[in-house]
Length: 203
Image 1 (cartoon, helix red, strand yellow):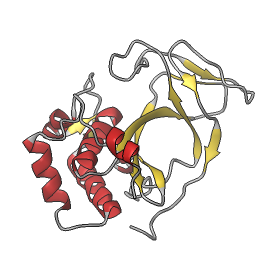
Image 2 (image 1 turned 45 degrees about the vertical axis):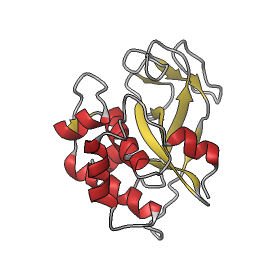
Image 3 (image 1 turned 180 degrees about the vertical axis):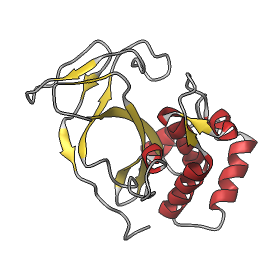
């Protein structure tokens, strides 16, 4: 059973998703109509995206419809498309951001990364990264798993009108110690290695 507040908050529409638009409703129906299991629906949406989108930085944050029709997008735009299709299918989904640590600390991230979390009864929030799955051979690796590295989820200030932090120009440093700095553009919420939690036995 999905808690009512999660269902209400994470299946709502916004300007980035347009989940009631005929393009989105028709597409999600075509992708998921044969399936009743919500996880299978999520996997089918995931597979559709990585088969029909190509990673490319277009210089903006276009909405789900624009991204899907164009066939290219950044990690944020992959997430917008994924969330739109999940929400249109009645599956709670949310947009999160963070930093994949690509080297030893101290580390400065000038790009950041975006992933999706979907909510399933019994399992709660499950991370999914359609962008990274589109770049590797094991295309279901990031369903229920982060990279086997450091990943920091964040939220906070910054000038973005849509998400509340600066996506492209903030410089955030990770110090050598376990103490995490707070910058003007974001607040670090966690700092720990997250090992992949595989869900292949369910998929």
